[in-house]
Amino acid sequence: MRNTSCRKAVASILLAACVLASGCTTGPKDPGGDPISSTGFMLDTVITITLYDGLNHENLDGAMDVCAKYEQMFSKTIEGSDVWRINHASGQPTEVSNETAELIATALRYSELSGGAFDITIGLASSLWDFKSSSPKVPDAAALAEAVTHVDYRNVKLEGNTVTLLDDEAQIDLGAIAKGYIADKIVAYLASRGVTSAIINLGGNVYAMGSKGGSNWTIGLQDPFKRRNTPISAVQLQNKSVVTSGIYERCFTAEDGTFYHHILDPKTGYSVRNGLASVTIISDKSVDGDALTTTCFVLGLEKGMELVESLEGVEAIFIDENEQSYMTDGIGGENGIPYLTTEDLG
Image (tube, rainbow, N blue to C red; front, top):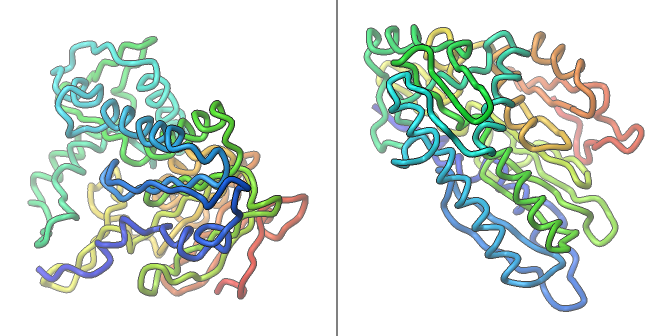
């Protein structure tokens, strides 16, 4: 099968936010010196944390440690993680950390809100796909059909810190929400250390902490139809999360010419096909943006837009496969809400 270059974009969905943002690579300098930055591979992606004040490498190392700590809890593949233990408990109750319980509770809330369009029990189906392979292939149809019979968030029983899978063959996968939760934890850690200006970039999740020398950060938005680090537009904001999910992130074209991407429909286990190319969510908390990008993508334009407009403090940009864009009413700079700064979308 022919693998397309889009698979490589997972590390730079919004890495463009640092490459393209006017305040990210050449931004404000603390009186004590240049910004400091650390980059590593965690959460199955490249992450970069850049501090513009509080220029202490202990702060930077501590922020990276926060990321590593939660990866050890939330990864479905790291043996001994909370998620790994839940998935290997054969339906028996599993005690997890406060943070894992909190994250699962948040995920279940979005599952309820979306009527199952967001579903963390997609783990068995998602494990059949390997979009990182140099030769990715479509899973066996029968195996995928069997896997989706075990996708139902209502089979996750959460009581305090105890998680039980009522379907003992079900598996949970927190990949569609964990990075957002972790980004928020990194922001909280840095704030506790007195940091007021930073960019936290966890692959497709960017949090613009504080301001750029008193001004808004300018965050570039990836054009889903062009090579990575090519912006279609940008938003200006402070203390906001920007999360984008799209068909260009992890994907491949099969030998028969069919295109597949990593955003899976919980009902079928196959790539969602509803005409959308990308969804960007702007929110106060990254955990919300992370969950909503997947949720809205699966719901589709009409229902996704309806959901976002029902939520306070959340804005969205949808781009369809015809390169047309659709934005919530708050995109436009009214009342300090983030606004577009380059050419009109679509």
